[in-house]
Image 1 (cartoon, rainbow, N blue to C red):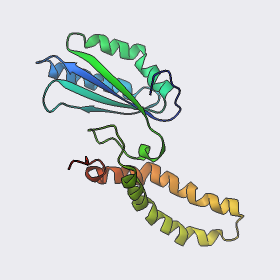
Image 2 (image 1 turned 180 degrees about the horizontal axis):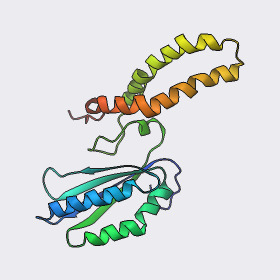
Image 3 (image 1 turned 90 degrees about the vertical axis):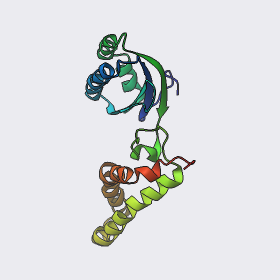
Image 4 (image 1 turned 120 degrees about the vertical axis):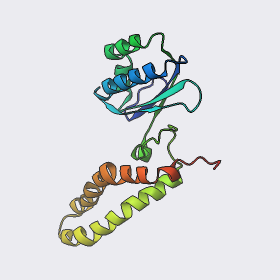
Length: 187
């Protein structure tokens, strides 16, 4: 997705940094500071650093609520000030921006990739999260709404289920099933 293309949903950016050999500790202290700054920025939905196994490349995954807020952070005075502090220690060598729409935003990034899990795994995980609550709503709530007008009865289910899934169930399932969800096809 290009920086000029408008997008109103969540957006993820991965930035790659090349750190000078021997300067890893200074870079990690800097990364901690800029992360705290970014997390306080409006629209920030998460920052995750990926430490290299070998070599001197670090990756940061930034998630923002929309392209405008991400761009505001990337162009901000605060970020520019932090970048001035890292001169001589590390260089930003690449960036990749990916918008996310649909159910993949329920699945947190595991720290190794920005690709969402395969759709069939997302569907199965969503079923595992939704089914118990669907059952409970149908069993405990629906019988008490029989006399309500259809539009109101129909609203009960999503009003109860969607916040549960979005804020509680899917983040928990995403963490619990992380190894399976994000397993690479080669394994």
